[in-house]
Length: 136
Image (cartoon, rainbow, N blue to C red; front, side, top):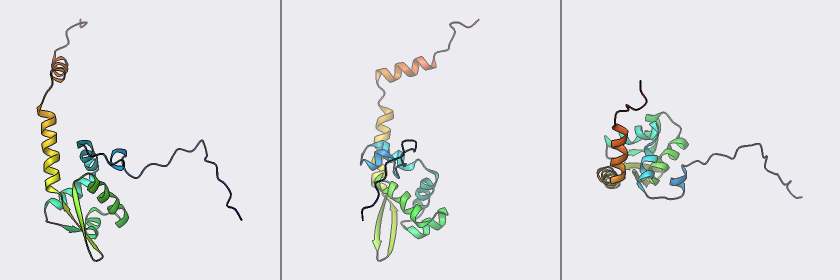
């Protein structure tokens, strides 16, 4: 017996992807690191890991008041963004900050903002000029 063929409903929106597009695509630029941090729960995870060498996933889930599957989802995003590393010991998974990768992200960001181009400084200067035309 064949299963009935289902045709997609054209009025229904496509399902949302679980991961932001650039992380899912495996991009490895600075935007991925910032995208990984763009969530209050993930920032709390990073803040918690900053105070200790490593923590169990179950401890982080309890601390952040999220389910184990939701915590795993957040940790996957942070891992793909190069913010954390995980290791398995039997049935337990431990997380720690990837401080070397974070330092690389910070250095890349500092390089990005500290090398102004002629165009960017012109745009900035124009934006700071007082507007006096057309005001009566």
